[in-house]
Amino acid sequence: MSEVLNVETHCHNVFSNHKNYSSRVPFDCGVTIEEQLEYAYHEKIDVMFITNHNTLDGYSQILEYKQNHAKYRNIRIYPAEEVTINNKGHVLAYGIEKEIRSGMTLEETLDEIRKQNGVSCAAHPFAVSNGIRENAKKCDIIESFNSNNIDFFSNIIAERFAKENSLISIAVSCQIDNRKKYQ
Image (cartoon, rainbow, N blue to C red; front, side):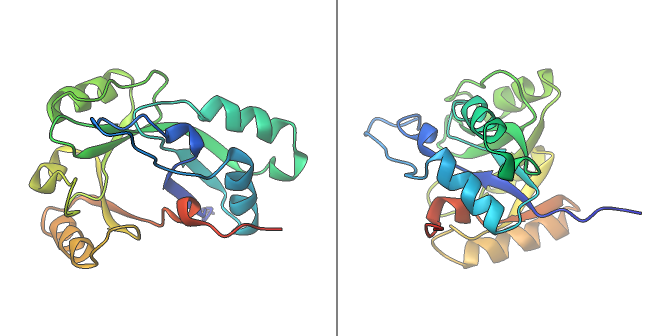
């Protein structure tokens, strides 16, 4: 019998801040690891991939926090990274153990992910400002829906693109980034 899991495949926490590949001082996310776990607990998320920008920081910290708080013991957490490539597009790297350097080409980034036996995902591939567009087919998986896209049309294009190219696609909420505090 197969198991149905509620999986969050694209989420950030405070460890993602100031890791963007950018000349400006970015602020990515204000969510603490405690808030992230509380959100996952209340939303009955079974599995989370922590996808902070250009870093694995936050992964070991959330595991340590989880270990010290029994109520979160059933939430499975895995390492991942949202890597910014040289054209400012983003690729999610799932199941990696070492950080992937930002600023490389898409092909170099995918090679680095494969060297670690990781899985690549085109993050918000048709987003207005930072999508990799048709190059998404070079990744193992494509986000066909991302609730944080500023325009809904980019999700429609991504879904159509995934179907036309027979790509494995996922829908992501990124809602942990925009959570309401749970009391």
